[in-house]
Image (tube, rainbow, N blue to C red; front, side):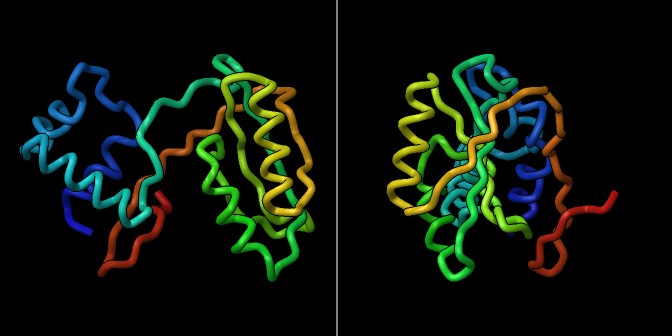
Amino acid sequence: MTPLHERLLNDFQQDFPLTPRPYQAIADSLGVTEEEVLSALRELSDERLISRIGPVFRPNRIGKSMLVAMAVPADQLPRVADIISRFPEVNHNYERENRFNLWFVLIANSEKHLQRTLLEIEGQTNCKAMRLPLLTDYFINLGFELELDNGCNRLSSD
């Protein structure tokens, strides 16, 4: 992890430049070239430290979204999580300590697409999904300040 990687991860989780050339704007603010920014982002993606760069919209304002939970046998959890993570409609795929131990947010351009993707996930994983549609809107800021220490990444407690 380079200082440029750290700056990209920390400084642009929010307030991403909304310009025709956002990576040039980032490069200008960091004193590097646009190609250095793009190269560093490709490296972070190749290392699976970032999965995507894109906007976050309020749920169900554009398309449809749903929280989904699955009760996955422990010995199958890595396999099932890997299958689910391959779907581009999946966001926030994570393990929890509970009978329902795998949770993810599913986002699609329509209710039909959402339901079709859920059925495909259930078919590929052989696990039943518990559908948790949004009833009340809560906002949780998912921006995290990263502190990098001797190659070990951790979340800041500040």
